[in-house]
Amino acid sequence: MASALEPNGPVWHLTMPVYRQLLPAVLAFSLLSLSGCGPIGPSRLQNDQLEYSRALGDVQKHEMLLNIVRLRYADPPTFLDTTQVIAGYSVSKSVSGGFYAYPATAVGNYLFGSGSMSIGESPTFTYQPVTGQQYAENIIRPISPTVIMPLSLGGLPIDTLLRLTAQSIDGLSNVRGLGAGPFGGGSVRFYLLLHDLRQLQIAGAMTVRITTDAPPPVDGDGAHKHDDPKQSTTEHAYLVLSSTSDSNLLNIQAEVRRLLHLDAQSTEAEIVYGPYPKRPGQIAILTRSMLAMLSQLAYEVEVPEEDIKSGRTPPTIGQVGIENRPEVVIHSGKEAPESRYDAVQYNNRWFWIDDRDFQSKLGFTMVQVLSALAATSHATGAVVTIPAG
Image 1 (cartoon, rainbow, N blue to C red):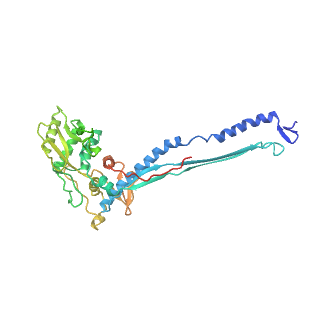
Image 2 (spheres, rainbow, N blue to C red):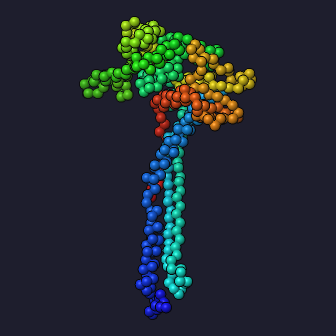
């Protein structure tokens, strides 16, 4: 049998049959070594954006629920903004290979190779505590009715919305927090009004209209007579009672007009901020701040009876009138159940919202939406420099 390799001086040459056998193997090895050289960014984006968004949403739920529980025990609420989320990746590859020729090694060992690849992820998060002027604007300042009322146009229940955000409507008082007594100091007629508004909303016999005033007149230089450009336009919100031929809805509309001291034939009324209207034909809503909103939810949290008896926290507020449950029911116990929408641990006890309680989940989601709307001032956050290349 002829040798696969024939000597020709000091150099060994491959005969054609062996070359044809080695060529496909060498090409396959090269392709495999280069197959991982494409960019990883697009593939990571498909997963990372959703995963980071989901994680950030879960953290915000935990923070909101924990602050409600902290207020129940007279601990100050704290808020930490996640100002930046940066995901950085690094890829390192090395490939080597070759082949030996017979008789330097065994006949079967024509090719050899080695390779390695490592992928590293280095996410960077920056946080900014909400303090000072930002805290005052986002947490302490009441939310404007012109910001709150349009939420009902998106299908959010208007009774839930006003129970959370309104301290009073035309003098009809919602429940209050600490020091208001076992029933929270609320008015039965306040809840009757919310019930009527919800019935009209479901039937399409009530809506909210938003208008914007024209900018103020300009001076001789063509500039608006305003120092603050944000004040160049003013929004107004109106409660509109739509026309209907349903006698039941007409009776409900008449009851709403009576509770709000409106004219018997009026079809709309401007919504203004304050405890009482400044002129006839207006509806005055004294809105709450986020702190006041969370305080009401805090004093409706279920807490252990021993904590009340020991003086660690006051008694839970009872419900008023036709309402028989809090807008957000928060349970407590030594262990959190598996069926939970959200849960946090505070002082060796778990507090949670049941995943099967849709009304509580909807109310809690609305609180988070209102918190985002109230955050009119955001911290800039730290500037992070990421090396490229």
